[in-house]
Length: 165
Image 1 (cartoon, rainbow, N blue to C red):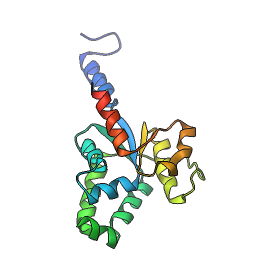
Image 2 (image 1 turned 135 degrees about the vertical axis):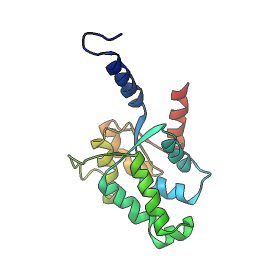
Image 3 (image 1 turned 180 degrees about the vertical axis):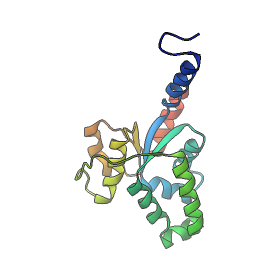
């Protein structure tokens, strides 16, 4: 039965939206994708699996995806991950299908010591991320000024486990 404002269908749609929006919104540092491409056994790969299984919502901006592509397509990275450039392209296409696009309305530079990390932080802040997942937490210490948790893949997976119960 609907209310004065919403009919039954609108209530169902609203409930789906609320439940769907409860997923953690995260930005993955490039090193997470690199680590996941090199080993299926680690926490970084488990984070990508959680993304595939719809347990989290990855946020991605154009500059960040271009960074992913540039790093994952380096010859030494292709050799270490036993992948080809077309395989990387297919992976990133799939990643982008699952990720929520983020427009960078505000640039917060400079905040970090490494200018290459700025796009990761900017994607997280503009996308209203719940967390930034990285293997280099020290590089993102200024993120705490914005109330943005910076977590390792293992710590992030623990938060997902705790929220299930």
